Length: 330
Image (cartoon, rainbow, N blue to C red; front, side, top):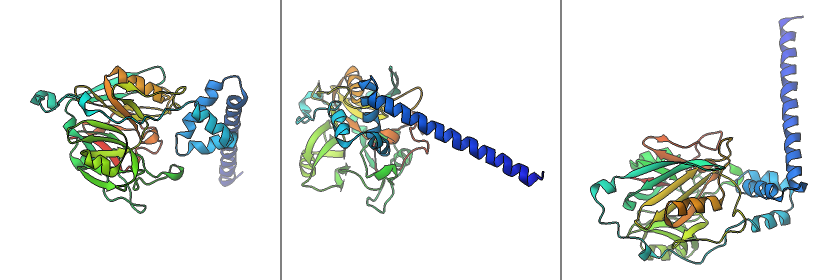
């Protein structure tokens, strides 16, 4: 037998092994999903549906096994009740009297809970926190990675921020979903359109709630993105149905009564960190004293950058994504 025939034989065997493995994995996945769909655990089924539907690509798998009506029903019983409340600025203390030492304080805390691990960053001086942008926006534009945006502003820390158009999970990060306000200027969005606002005003107060872009600017919002849901408003947790969501990587921002900004990034879709639900993030924010808090974009976008490096684990096998906006700390 020639060397060429031996090589072809080996390649065929390797190919058969790979194909067999893929088929077995697909059969196993199909079996797991069918058990979730028809098995005794409604909790597991609901968790699977909600977790997958929150990702850009995972929803395709869910629709293969569940009807649109069933998906809608499962998501409705595990959701966040939308609130009409908007931040009451009087609940936040005046932050202009900080000492120089306090202004420089940034604390990073390792978070370990039952289903997830993550990082909590506490920024004592809220005036250091703003929205960083990738540059020009539009369908033909491309976003930048969290680290790249941070470095372009000379920022010491950053997380991902608002959402973006991401059909099929292959978006380029150049077209924000919602509005973007940076350094007092409307960079994306329409003045008369109502958005879910997550921003910081000229008094360095975190503002969360629904309002038009014009109303946000009139209120003195200097930096903002759109996402959600709102998790805590004026010291009260929003009402949650069930778990509120599935388990996924999360990014969220909050503010304590003393003005300190809370930035949390939670790892997910990993063996040692499945992810967090909205209920988990609400509980975490309240634990650290948040008066107001809101959920930012999550999933494979969730990253925290500090002192020149990423300090959490990216959920994407392809590494950090290109994004239109970040929350930066200068």
